[in-house]
Image (cartoon, rainbow, N blue to C red; front, top):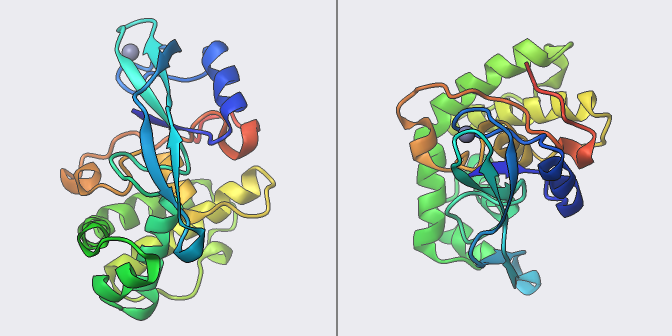
Length: 221
Ligand SMILES: [Zn+2]
């Protein structure tokens, strides 16, 4: 599974053009049908809607492994959009509220929201270290990119990812990049999963092709 642009046409062009790299061997991915249908909950409150979709799938021309191409608005193994998960994390960091009131506010099951927040909390140190390093590597004026001082590990992680979203927005000359989009684009579809950060093995953090409306195709390295 890998994270790609949420713009279908951009993904298709990258896939056909051989611009998407296999997460396993860096070989070129070629079109290979679609993954099974997913039902994703979008929005909050009266805007809550169930949306069906079948992500594109690619197969590596070298190792022949198949990979699901997940749009940057979605996270692996989550039935809600990344924006909703991000809203839960922001509420936790901003107010220190527990998972119950946040779940009530978002209109999501308590156990689901507890899972999101737990995963982000235990991943905080890994996320903060990885994205702080990226900000200092890629940010021309790193000091100006940091948001208000953060409290706690989760706040620090959120601030670091938000700072890197600022780096990406400047690089691609787009107004803003949502922090969860930066996280998923760079760390991959398991950005919101504790397993992604658990073993502290720093997988390659690379900017995906097609980031920021297809202006990409460049690596972050
Ligand atoms: Zn491969």
